Length: 418
Image 1 (cartoon, rainbow, N blue to C red):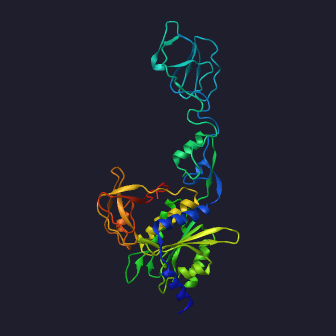
Image 2: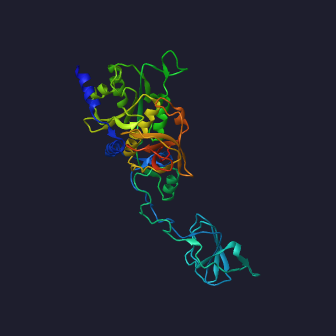
Image 3: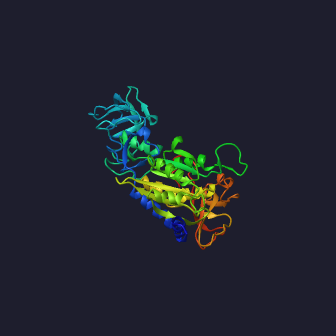
């Protein structure tokens, strides 16, 4: 037996990691290697992750602000009109009882104001004074009503979306400290793959080259067209050269196929040649069992990762949601998400000692999950109509009415769920 064959046999003999254990393990190594913080203008921060808590630079609001259009009055009425206050101006104080200024919604309330009378609840006297009865509750927002200066509004690890950008602007920020977005690349392995046209003559169309980069972008990665390479020739030297080149710029390199130990499966010896350490090597999950995650550490401490995705398309997506998604959450400094619970609308079989990730349509209104058809490892038809994977734990099966976790698919760019 050759040295390479003996090593492969030893790897195969090792028991696969449990699915939940594998997720926790890769999240931990990702968080330990969290990407550095950078400053980004608000216009460029969407889709990033807060690297430090978001706090207001002043009280919110920073000054007393009228909630209505009306009259800022002092003392008892009727009131003599002495001016007007519009938003964006600092008004002089109301110094005498019996005086008022017209005030617009959002305008700064003058010092000395005792009440604000709504415009629609006011009248004018014959001599031009303002009359009416102000409501008992103040019609303005006090400083700090929403937040106080320095108060933590959002923790580090929060994904930046349009709502966060608006809040940051209202807090007075022009830039945000965020985690740099992960840079990812994809290597497609397999001489049998076609990159254009219909399948035939023993060759199949590559479905992962177009789809995996799109999934990675939805998980927050930067993936350029030049970062997608393949099919890479089914030789060890070609694999080593392609992976070494991809790792030069990427924080994460995903590969498709070659995760087993067949005659043209070169991923394991390639990782060995590059000095990689396995974080996870096979996972007790169906479909997608022969997935892996490896880590490389440079002499300067720079950490990069290789995610080996199975060649079957649905199995590759299972590997993405199982290993790549929690790794990227860690790299971006995001918390490990808690999987939502759903109610199975129909039975879902178990897979013995393996976790079963079953494709489902998720009715978020009813909270129910409906299994889909055409879910073989090599099929994508079922995936195209699914919202996520129901998790059927080892040694169990799912009966209609059971509550089980679900791993949502990130169906829109920047969506928070995974």
